[in-house]
Length: 175
Ligand SMILES: [Zn+2]
Image (cartoon, rainbow, N blue to C red; front, side, top):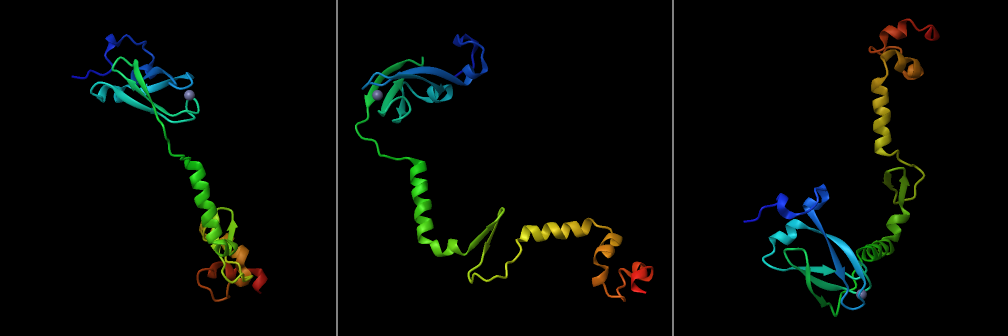
C-alpha cells in the first residue's frame, strides 16, 4: 500500500519536497555529477528499481542509465553505447527550411501584414484588406451613433435615405 506524503518520510516540509526528491547522479564514464529532481510518484510506482535515462548534455556529454531504489539512492549505472542524435530543435529547423525551399513560389506570393497573411498569386496591385481589419472597421461603425455616421458620410448618403431622414432634413449643407 502506497502512502503518499506521509510525515514520517523524514523530509523537510518544503512543498517541493513532497512531490520530488533530489538525487545526485554521477556519470559512470567521466564521473561528472549533478543533482536532479525526480518525481516521487515515478519512484513509488516502480516495483523495485526505477531506471532513469540521462540523455547526453544533461549532466555531461555522455548518456547513461541510472537505477534508483525506493529510498532514492542510486544503486547502479549502465552506459549507453549508442544514442541517436536527435535534437528536436535542429530537426524542426530542417523541416521548416525544407518546407520553405519546396514552397518558395508560394512564399513569394504571400503578403504578411501584422498578424494577417494574404495570398496574392498574381502579384496584382489590388491589395485586399485583411479580414480582421475590415471587421474592426465594421465594429467601429457600429459603435458610432447615427448622427456621427451621418456627419462623416453625409456626402455619400442619398437625399431620400430613410434611415437618415431626420438629419437630411435638418442639414443646411444639402439646401
Ligand atoms: Zn560523462
